[in-house]
Length: 537
Image (cartoon, rainbow, N blue to C red; front, side):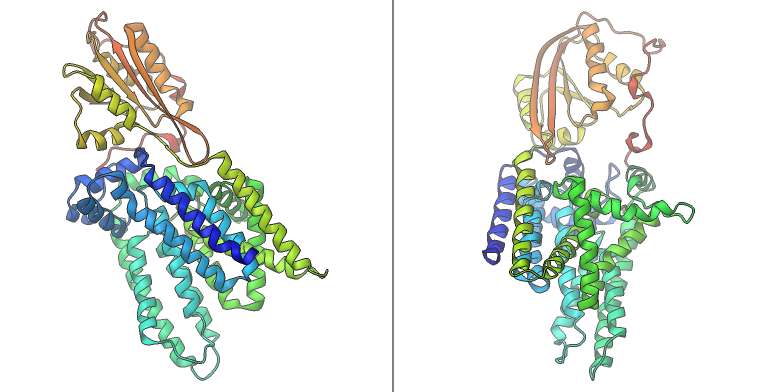
């Protein structure tokens, strides 16, 4: 029964991704920001100049997205087509790798979390590179597993050598973390080649040296281009925002050695929709899998582990964060190692049919846990469903109206307004976290206006900025209309887009030079990672 479960899981995972895709949820802020870069720039500008609004993405991803927008139109389905295909490909490739490495009863332990994880379903229909990061990492893993079989009697066909070299060379242009993956796999293949035995040893080393050499040259070039694509402001902002993902390795603090285990548990838990305790259990099972593969097939162990080692090294050097969606590309290898760990434990059971019972129990447990995660946060995920609010604003607004777009809503508003302009003149609000007076000064510009619309999305609830702004408006005039669009993210949390209409005609304009007595809001002290991003360059 377990052997027949794998294709069902793959089919179910594909169906869930298609459901999310064709639901056509609105672009949320992060998506819209990258989508605006893709749609508004020429192909040459997109791949040669730094992105606006402190964004970062691999040039290959941007190239494919631009072609999709030019061919199919600048809409959600066109921009999300490549992430969708990448997510489906990742699921199929993971099944193939699992069949290569695992006994058939263990395969569902890998496929179930990957097929049903809410975040993976969400990323399949998101204009971001996370799905392609995962698909590319699995493709590279498959290439390395085939190339690492240095004890094979028959030589690798020339076309397979060329394909392996080309796959890695192309991957680093399509995925930024692929540079870490090819670095790890290159080390694994090099070590494996040094331990080669038999008559073909010299030729095998030459073949692998060619493959790894091509990877290295392409990775170096891609890294240089990626750094050129990142402005100093964007680099500082991202380093601060993702600072929790940098391993604080220190000989003075031995406890920092436990950081990789804890953050691997957090990674698996957060990205697969699991409690952190189960994420920790998966991390420990992966450790068992590392030991098991080292004993039985040490080259395979290196292929599975070295990208993780390189990623941790990059994290310790503050070069690339080991955190959340940016480390999602490591999840397939960790799942494979955890499944190997389960199979190893099952094989150690000496009772009659004990191994089969253990595997069945493990599979049932994984299915139940993932079913609970999916039940708690089922598709369709609508992170920031701004389009109904914009549609209402389009119907209800008049040409003389004014509108204020909260800074969190600006990217999505800009994307949809560019496709179908609204009659009301819009003022884009600035990000002034910790400075409530700056927000109030923006709102005071609308004093004396009888119809002022305000659109809010992508708020940070703990800062209470919207509440502070509405309290000020209530003191100046009268709320005439409002609308709330409720959504839900892949973690099951409710999300909101809010639209308001205020009459401020009774409130006369004030001298902007008059000092304010309004105290700062509770957002006055903002932790560094939540500071407003610097202006795009």
